[in-house]
Length: 359
Image 1 (spheres, one colour):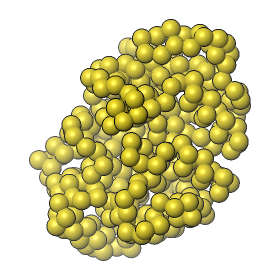
Image 2 (image 1 turned 120 degrees about the vertical axis):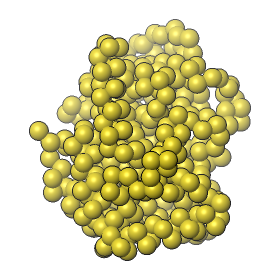
Image 3 (image 1 turned 90 degrees about the vertical axis):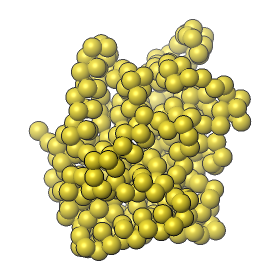
């Protein structure tokens, strides 16, 4: 049976113009511009968009709430950090937005490094950060699905806590899905037991297949008590009418990136996380992997989902994405710049090819 796929985009939520090659418009982060993106996503068949987070950016939850009021079906995938939020506070805020939007909230839990001291959080090693994340996710889910919750953990405590309003079950959806990323051993243990969806960056097919197998087996060994873990792919897609045109655009972007030493492309500061290191190490295996996975951007300063790109005609990129789908990827979070132009281009050319066989 084929996997039922869904397709989201990316809204960077960045104070600086020109994010990853986007048009350097002074109004890029205005409500009018961001709403134009969200509304274009609705018109062109996208389910919603991941909204980035980090200290020094506008508050992600506020942006998501504002965009939800300007749309009717757009589903924000809201990136949040344990430590920036307390579990009960977040559970209540998300439940409120979910109720007001008719069940459109999705949540991406982020454990990576941030300017923690700026908002009163404390530095901790990777293992402690992921232990806290595990506790945060378990407690938030309980607050959404149980009443009078009491919990006394290593990092968080609540007593007789009932988050209001209550989350309304919508078919099989009991609460907003919790998305999660990370490739370290500690991160994978969190994903295997607590996440609803594990997100991967753009690794080759064989590497993604190996990670899916490992996480599935780990879930069984750790006695996961949730529905089976789902998988998603967050990747940059450079799509044009022909392969030749797409590669010309991709190579020109990389040349410009090299000339600017990667300025505007790297929003994942040091130290380099395990998942980021995996992407950078792909360069040693070749500039182009799996027919059209382009590793050169990482060489010249790109990071995160901008480190590797799928490049080609709509037919070629769709063919590659279908191969990931055949491995078990259900959620695809795509992007390219200029963001608004590519929402429309890829929504018109790429998405119809993917929906034809989406299940």
